[in-house]
Image (cartoon, rainbow, N blue to C red):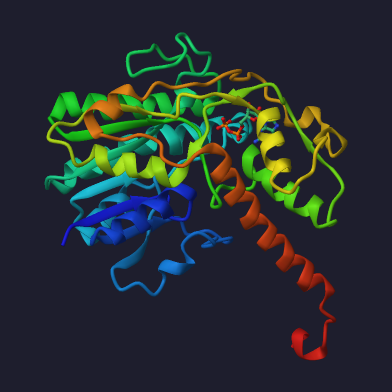
Length: 337
Ligand code: GDP
C-alpha cells in the first residue's frame, strides 16, 4: 500500500487530492495547522476513513515537518499548504513569503533529512506569470509575478527545481492556472459570486460588491486539475507542467454564467464595485497552454466551464437554503440548552 503526505489538507486542493489518493488505494496523511478556528468543511467526510489520518504540522515549523514525514513514511508528498489568497498577501507579505516561499524549502530540507526516497509535488501557480510575457503561457515563458504571493510562489517553484538539480530529487512543480469548485474558499471571486447568486435568487440578499470586473482568468475545475498533479508524480522522470484550459474569461463572463444558472439576466442590478476589493497591482489576464501535459501525461481538462459553474451555484443554493431554514426555525429552550 502506497503512502502519501498531503499538506494543506483542509483546503480545496488538499481535500480533493486526499479523495483521489484514497480512491486509488493509498494510505493518506493530511497535514493541518492547529488553529483556534479549525475548519474541516472539506475534510469532515474523511474523519472516519481507516486509511486516512490527520497530522499536526506547519510549514513555518521545520521540526513538525520532519515529524510528519517520520510518522507517515510517504512515497509521495503533495505540498498544497500556503497563504493562498493573493489579495491577503499585501497585508501579510512577510508571512506569505515565509509560509508560501520558505515553507517549500523547509519541506525539501525535511525530506533530505528524512533520507528515504520520496517523490515531491509542489503546487506552483499561474500567478508566477503575472503580467503575461507570452500569451498563452507555457513552461518556457518567463515569469513576472505581480503580488507578494506570486513572488513567494516563484521562490517555491525555483527551490523545487534547484533541489531536483542539486540533489537528484524526484521533484515536480505543477503550474496550475486558477481552478475552482464547490470547495473553493469564499474569499475567491468565483465562490464569492456563486454564493451571492444563490442568496439573491432565494431573496436572502439584494446586492454584493466586487472589485475589478475586467480581469481575465483561465478557470478550470479543481478535481480535473488535481488528477494532473497525481499524474505528474507517476512519470519515469520528474518535470514541470502547465495545467490550464487554454480559455480566458472575464469576471463579467463569470457573472453572466453564474446568474444564468438561476435564470436572472441583467446582473448589473445586483453588483456594485468597491475600491476595497481592487489590488495594488493587478494581473489583467492569465491564460495557459497545457500542450506538454497533453502530450506527456495524457491529461486534458474534462469538465466544461458551464457545467462546473452550475455545480457551484447548485451547491451554494443548497447551503443558502439550509441557512434560510435555520433562520425560520423558532428557537426553543431546548435548542439553547
Ligand atoms: P487570483 O487569480 O488567485 O487572485 O484569484 P481571485 O479569485 O482572488 O481573483 C481573481 C480576479 O478577480 C482578480 O483579478 C481580482 O482582482 C478579481 N476580483 C474582482 N473582484 C473581486 C473580489 O471581490 N474578490 C476577489 N477575490 N477577487 C476579485
